[in-house]
Amino acid sequence: MKPLLHAEFRRLLATRLWPTTLLVAALLGGGLVGVLAFAGPENFQPPMPGVHTEAGVRTVLGFLGFTSFVPAAIGTLAVTSEYRHRTIDCTFLFAPDRWRVLAAKLVTYGVAGMVYGLVLSATAAVALFGAAAARGVRLGLPAGTVIELLARVGVAMAAYTVLGVGMGALIRHQIAALCVVIGYLYGGELLLLMIPGVRELYPWLPGGATAALTDFTAVADALAEQQSSSPVHLLPPLAGALVMLGYAVLASTAAMVKPMRRDVA
Amino acid sequence: MSDIEVRNLTKTYGTVTAVDDLSFAVRPGTVTAFLGPNGAGKTTTMRMMIEHVVPTSGSVTIGGRRYREIPHPTTMVGAVFDSSFHPRHSARDHLRIYAAMGGYPDRRVEELLDLLGLAESARRRTGGFSTGMRQRLNLATALLGDPRVLLLDEPGNGLDPEGMAWLRSLLRDLAADGRVVLVSSHALSEVQQVADEVVVIRKGRLLAAGPLRELLGTARAVLVRSPDAAELGRLLRRSTHPVEATGPQDLRVRGLDPAQVGDLAAAHGLRVHGLASEHSSLEQLFLDLTGDRTCA
Ligand SMILES: Nc1ncnc2c1ncn2[C@@H]1O[C@H](COP(=O)(O)OP(=O)(O)OP(=O)(O)O)[C@@H](O)[C@H]1O
Ligand SMILES: [Mg+2]
Image (cartoon, rainbow over all chains, first blue to last red; front, side, top):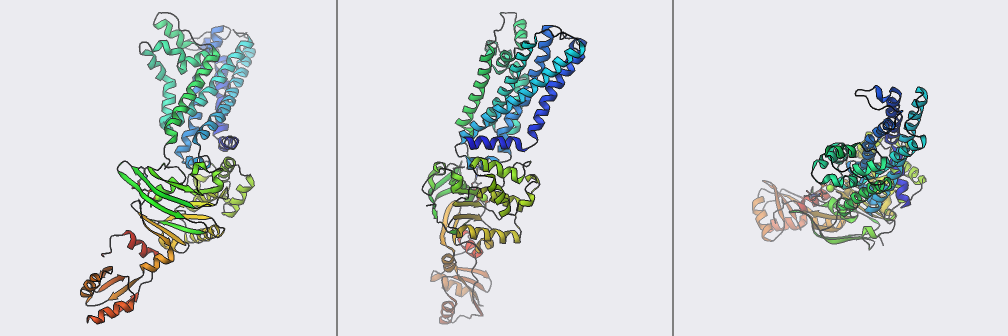
């Protein structure tokens, strides 16, 4: 297993994709949160609660949740680019136990996803606290809570990276895998929720699990409102994280049952 | 201990039988040419050797084991198929990734870059590599583990004459070290200069296998020019010798030497204007074995 991990880290670091991804993390974290917090959400059209309120801080941090497509895409590419460039031939020659190849990628990209999440959250923290200090605004949430929420966003990013790896292994085709993963994140799940009864499953769906993990409950609140029934109860944060990992394991296991075993020719 | 044994190997894709009950063995210390026309099943057979393709039936073992059962498989087997590199990786990146995967030191990467003449291009991205450079990088990857067995699927594809000469001497050296070297090709004239053994297949079936010299011996033909070619041809066919009419006055006869053909013609009062022993070539052997041109 160690040689495979060594190889996967070398592969990850060999191109400019990785430093570029971290730059994107900093731009999304520091940039997005910085712009929102400096300009003040209350000055937007339509106006949103300012960062001096709890709702305001949560909204600003909530935007970070929408960027999960980046780590998801990076994870997906980990497997699909090997099929696309046909390096998978060589990889399976060196590591004929194909599940080991997938396991090494899951671990490597789990770590990569954490680093991504760390950069995203750390730059966001700097931007948020910096903006508050510069504008002389007192944040609507205690610093400890903000940091905890940001850490949870970071963990969610790692979970999406690993989920991407699993989906990439399952679908194998680069464009198709990206379409499925990103399509689901932006719309797929909301469409699914329109089916009667599926709403009850929301806490267990990736979006619901992410909401539990990041404590960003806009969708859950909207669901409760729209159907004017009992509020949707999200899972505890840790359970949300485990559900996300569960999806990654499920996708990877399904990948090992068939797609990863197929002939490479 | 590194022989390749192919036993009753069959692979079907839907209604297409790519490999059909194929059996042969490849021995160490020789360069074995794996020949067949396009679509004969060479690539499929070689991919089954490393379990990239799962056989429909039959088996392949290398040194008595299935590929997956070989401990540290890349110290045993190196393989070259269509070049497959990440276009944004440099040659060195590519080799370092697989050196790590095989557990080989980075020193080995530098050795191979030198051995294969890639040292100067080591930092360039493979996306911009020429065909020859890609083939060299392919070979370098296959050689990382200093394997006992080399499976090379058309390694000469796209090489210029100089590159081919270099490849031939490399293959010679590798075989001289006692390795198994299996090279598929349809560039027959090029393989002829390096192969000790040949395995010829068509439509997934074995046509011939054995030492190249012996196969060329049996395939030697006599070229006859005669105004009575039609009559002579009938005569030869009646004595069950394979004859091919290559022109109105020309015949190509196998299984007899020039003296025997001349005597036969004289005995029947037929004129012979020219008689020559054909320069035997693998090209011709190949056509005789795989083509339908010969009328027996
Ligand atoms: N993945 C596949 N799916 C369907 N048919 C296939 C597949 N791979 C090979 N075939 C078929 O199997 C047969 C043998 O193909 P193969 O590539 O092994 O031949 P080859 O001897 O390597 O040919 P070439 O000299 O052109 O490389 C062909 O008819 C081919 O179309
Ligand atoms: Mg082929």
